Image (cartoon, rainbow, N blue to C red; front, side, top):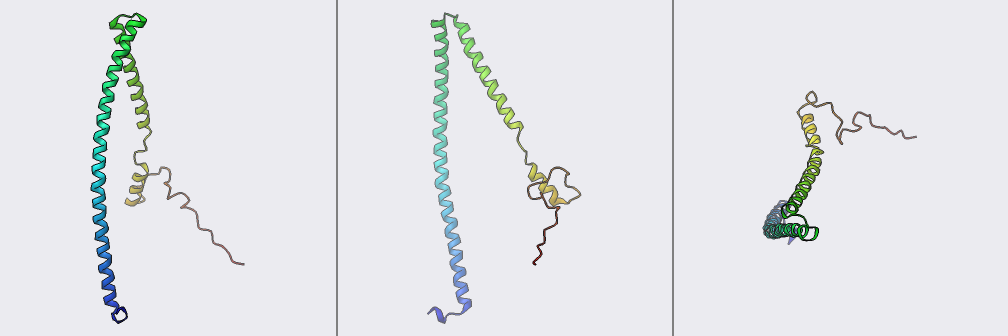
Length: 147
């Protein structure tokens, strides 16, 4: 009966059950990770195949646009292909510029660097703006008086 067991025996049983539970949870997490990794791998392969097919469609659409410029507008074949090529070059340049501007605004782990410098010592910390945890740290706490 549980009433007859000593406290030490009960603690040992609880410890054994907890360690078994932790091991079971770790095994469950491993199996879920393997399952998710397979699904992610399969999805990545499918996305790559779709991107390849879309790339082929873009090439075919480029030829179609060039030949439409030849037939409908009446441009020379070399000029219509040049127009399509210049359009894609301008588009690529624009996308590259926008991407460059987006990367230019990255924070570069400023808060983490500042936090690590603070851990090294206050004399090595930079005098830049305070981090989220430092705001208001110079103020004294308000003590309430009870009437």
